[in-house]
Amino acid sequence: MANWQTKITGFFAAPRYAANTLTVECFIAADRLFAELEIHKKAIEAATKELPTSDAAKPDGNEREIQNYFEQRMATINKIANEGLSRRNTSITDTHLQSERAAITNLSNHSKLEIESLMSRECRELMSLKQERDELDAEYQRFRTAHRLKRMPHYPESQLLNFAIILVFWLVESVGNGYFFAEGSELGLLGGVAQAVIIAAINISTAFFIMSGLIRYKNHLVRWKRLCAYLALLIYGFTALAFNLLVAHYRDLFTLDSGNADHLALQQFIAKPFVLADLNSWMLFFMGVLFSLFALIDGYKRDDAYPGYGKLHKRLASLHEDYEEQRNDVIAQVENIRQNFLEQLELMTQAVAMKHTRLVHLVEEKQAFISEYEQGIATFMTTANAFIHRYRDINQAHRHSAAPAYFSQDWKPNRKFSLRGNHDDIEQVKAQQALYLNFPGYGQQRANEIEKLYVQFFDRLQQMDPNVPNVQTAAFASTG
Image 1: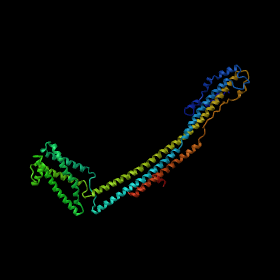
Image 2: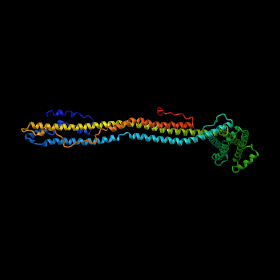
Image 3: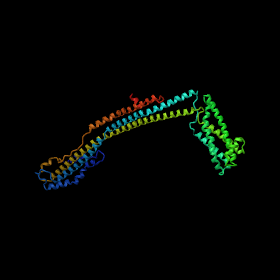
Image 4: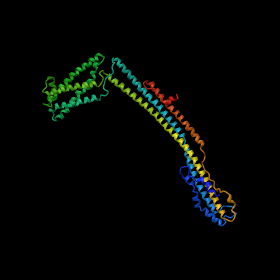
């Protein structure tokens, strides 16, 4: 047994795997341990006493001490190995691809349900809106034909500017009139403006809101409506002149007798309509007429010159806009559902690849872990027997009596160190490998179902609206 160190040299190399508890516990520094156990000294001491006796059938206390040490160390690594195997088996069991496959199934079913629900609900609403739009479009075309209109209507996109202009006219006229009325007011300019605001509102609003709509009938196809429009314009012209003359007379008398100015102004207007006291009253008159004319022009320009043409076209344009907005919104919703599914499918495909790689790594690492444990047990057995036989060799060399018969036998521990869960996982790896290889095809199949619905959705839209572009997705086209 002199070559005992050579027998165990291979077991004392640097650990093959990354440092962990098992690796640390399996490592033995043989020379240091041999010295710590004082095997050489104890063997000589026992030999001088001729122990163990030649007829001894069991090891002596020194040898049992060596056996107990190695048996405890083997029990420790056996416990560590079983705990490590339990964790590894749990990780391997939990690393399965069925969850991703089920998630793809649930996601595709949910996405299909969403698209089908949108197709059912939104297409009905779109059809109703399109029918309303088509009916109004037919009415619009009949209007053009009936009124012999070949041009498109002309009107501002927004009437905000027109209303802003009329507001400025009203404010300017109110301030201007207020200046002229300020002479007879106890509150000065402030009192004059308070009266002028009402006068300016009547003067401007009548022209802007009422007359601007009536005079459009001067362009009407029907002759009597054109004549009525010109008559209304003539009447309004006289009315506007009379109203502003009356205001000018009121201003004349307001500066002299503000309490009776309203009654006296009407009498003076009837008696001498074109006789005003001073230049300021004439300026008030001309300013009122001028702003009335401006308001009439501004109101006339806020819509098409032909009565009803611009209003009808606005309604039609609004319906077109509503229809296209709702159609585009539905398309965007379906597109979002489709894109979300494809993105989730891509993420799950990546997750499956990562899980499969992890599973292979876990199984390989488990087998390496088992091999390390088995190598550790073998190392302890070899080292223990090497130490025991060395003890016996030294003892035998220093004694006079014959050595016991059991000195020629190898030691075996009383306990059996077994591993739980050290199966090879081949069947699970094969099953997961099959799922991994089939997953791209399964995912493509589910994607094609979504793409098919996506194309059907656009086909249905095309039946309602030929202007919707035909959609053929790459994923669906690739499978025919």
